[in-house]
Image (cartoon, rainbow, N blue to C red; front, side, top):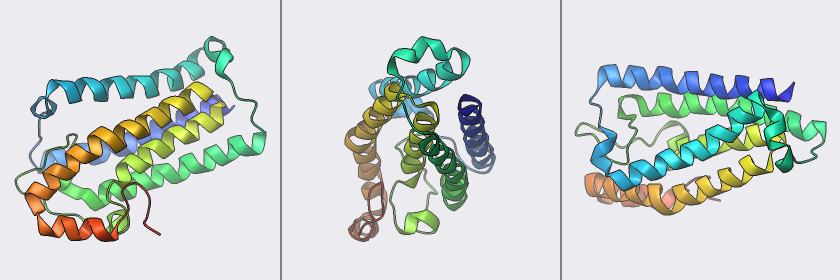
Amino acid sequence: MFRWLSLSIFLAALATSASFRLMARANSEVIPRRREGGGLLVMRALIALALVFPALLCVAHPSCLSWCLLPLREWIRWLGFGLGVLTIAGVGWVLHALGPSISETALTKPEQQLVITGPYRWVRHPLYTAGLSLFVSISLMQGNLLLLLTTALAAAFFRMVIIPAEERALIAKFNGHYQTYKTRTGRLLPRI
């Protein structure tokens, strides 16, 4: 049952993201990913593959990954489902707040505004938080240690590579405004 619930959560989050991204593409400039550089493009693709492949393999052929199963209690798996449902809403909230500023790169659009409303009021990169939460949720529902470890790897990649690249671009575009914004917000979680 949980493998189908995890697939449903994954597809709902993907559909939510796709609908907002399509609207943004229709209403503003699209920055081609190749402008970020080949290295970053390859690293993003590898991280995406490392997350999506085991998640979908657990649904299609659960016996293939039986070696990395975690014996989780049912209530923890339901907790994962609840986190997944919240993540779908979170993805919608984040992308609604971004509006036409949605980009699939670390680069900024010429007409881009600094978004500091919605979840951006507390967190500078809530879309990465939502993406990581999605895969933690799927890991818990499926009881999959491999997926949990690849999610941790993705978090490290975002923290050390993607977020610094994005923040360099945002500082270059918004200068002091972004620096001030950084002092009062957390990177992936709200500042306490």
